[in-house]
Every structure is written in structure tokens, then in C-alpha cells.
Image (cartoon, rainbow, N blue to C red; front, top):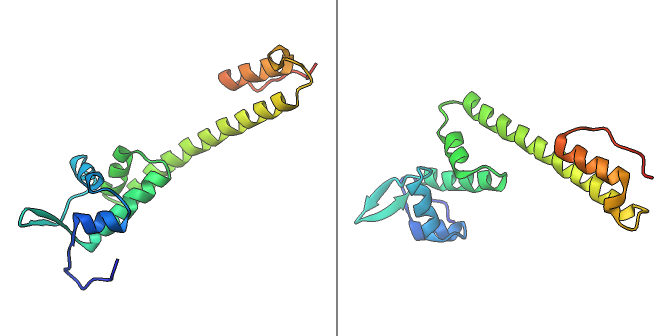
Length: 143
């Protein structure tokens, strides 16, 4: 998008096109309180550079896995420490998800190299799958 002099506004179509979004996405974000246009001129939404930046932050928040509700909390937080608390909570959830993915990778790697014809009969697999679900980290030797 071209740089704008102070005070220039953009139509919903211009903002949507810049970010390769359908205009209805921006309308939805308005309906859930994520985005508020600066003004309506002749009944049409007009956005400022500040709203342009907010759309970029919403998109980035989606990329890192925040829900729209959590994104609204993040953007509407009163101060930096409030925003940091929200992001720390999300980081903690991502760490837990990464741990579950690593456990799944290890289990699948074992299955792919297991010497048992039917891996479901493998004692190590049986213990590891139970441990993955219950959080118990003990495992048996591959028999």
C-alpha cells in the first residue's frame, strides 16, 4: 500500500486487498470487537493507518495461534504487562503442545522401527501409549 499523508483513510476494499482478505473478514472482526473503523463517510467504512496496523497485528496473532477472543484481549489490554501476561499464557500452552508433539513423534518413531509384526502387541508400545495419555513417564524395554 502506498504511504499516506496524515489523515488519509482507506476503504474496506483497499484494506482487504492489501492483506489479501475478503471484506467480510474485516466486517466479522468489527462484529466481534477486534476492529473499529475510524469513521463512516457516506455510509462507507473508512480506516486509518492505525486500523491498518491493527489488522496486521490481528493477522500475526492468528499466525501464532491466538483465538480471536484472545487477540482482542491482547490488543485491548491496558498496558504492556497485561499483554505480556496474555502472551506468557499462550507461550506456556505452546510449550505443552510441543511436549505432546514430541511424545507423539517418539511413539511413532518406535512403531516404525518396532521388531514386532503387530506393534500393538509390543510391550514397550503399550506402556508408552499409556504413558502418553496418563503422563506416566515409565516405559518398558522393547521385548
